[in-house]
Length: 554
Image (cartoon, rainbow, N blue to C red; front, side, top):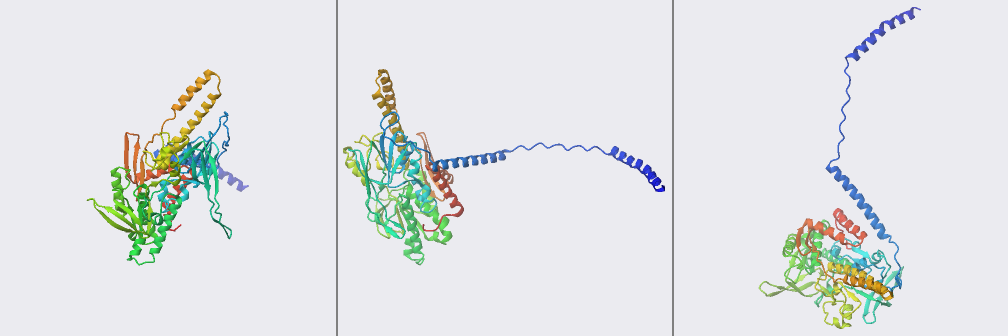
């Protein structure tokens, strides 16, 4: 009882004091103000740029993925047949060759209008501008090769490809004789040698003659036996193997021996774009990569470029020629101009140097590896065809064609590329434009043929007149071929290139340097036909930038 009274009294005493203290604190405390909200930061220029780059990268990746899928999974094609949908007869077109002219023609032709057959012993299209990069492994040989069948499957109409070599053309009977030579091969442990060739004859309504040319040795003794060429993919592989054979053999000899110096001398004969780019690539290879694995080889190895004319790259402006000479001098490439090769033996190039005073001096240039990058000469098939046509009897440097690329003296044979002789230089750019022009010409020719066929069936005079007017307009659209020079480019070493760019007849821009080198690479990638090859070439360049070039023989 006493305890309850004490507790009750304690509560009565403490509670008023406690509440009074709380009231005093609340009255004296200032209200807490909320912190002002900071405005949200707006994305700046760099953020937007980053977003744009990411979006562009994603878009490019999606596009490449689609393009690769489409290229590797071609859709259906209209099958070949004897008649078109309108009842007109389908003409047979036979294409000889798989180079720039032939493939550019095939790529742009409406193959639904013709029954197309392409014949070539080489079952791929070779992107020749990058061929000098192959011997040094800057680019792989497979990266610049597009299978002919893959290109043919991208066309709307079915195309027949035959891996064979044309051995004879009969312009009277409109036939082509082709031969496929079986190769020897190993089956398990047994060696199979099937030398029996398989031959057949093809009939054509139109023949597209684009067999190209062979290397011109100008009858110089020793060139065919001892020099390597750089015209096909396997040539580049052979050059690389010879280069490394010479390097490895030199390692067995004393440093001061003449034989070692000879083996370590790389000689290129020919001062055109191919010769200049090959010399530049090999010098880069030595200075940038080989010296890492073979110490001091850059001090011993020598690259020599031999040219019979006073200058290299004669198709370029003089200031770019001088720039090339300056780059070569800084690199240490030995440039020998006014030097005409007389003969070659297994170890030496014998040449005559023309002096400024008009006199000549005989010189001997030892070599370990020799590459001949001379001009072009007619193939035997081209000479044989010219001999069968009266109007071609005077054709010594190539077949003669008219303004529509039709062979002089033939009504249904069209020729283009290096096998012809025109006012234009025998370059890939010329052959490419000729192929695109001829494809457009044949697309229009097919429409003209259909109009004439419909006109022959029409009995209504008014309809006949309308068709006649359409036929005249279609004939007027068959314009002559006009070459439009778009410039020339060449790699000169040390990640520098030169470019002579033209825009019509009013502007020409001559450039040289590292920025031009980037433009050179970008332009060449854009010119490659297949998406697969574009990706492979860029991948090769990235691989070289990260890991360097390979130093093995193969």
